[in-house]
Length: 112
Image 1: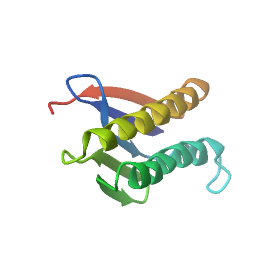
Image 2 (image 1 turned 180 degrees about the horizontal axis):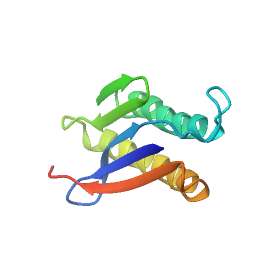
Image 3 (image 1 turned 135 degrees about the vertical axis):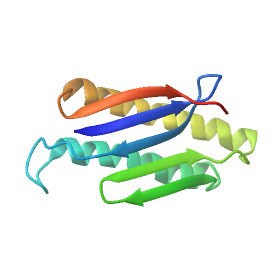
Image 4 (image 1 turned 120 degrees about the horizontal axis):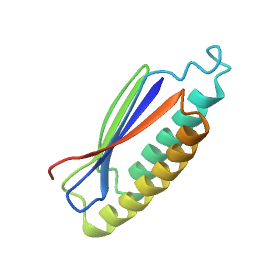
């Protein structure tokens, strides 16, 4: 199962996310659930790197992706980053709703 954790600050803005695991919907290379989840998350990272001035913390390894907005973001870059992360969350929510046995989405409030 792919586990997606969306982390929000005290005002409810998504400031980080973590994706781990494999969907196990189909064989490796044929898994549309895993591919869709990965594409949505990786596209958000690309958007953040481009539109949020590259101010992100990243950890990537096989079956794992962590991305967080840096505290040093300007207010304009933070606003763009928040919109990108909200859009990513919508896409991941739709995938999790369509494939609940393969993708789990959890929200976590963090102090920031």
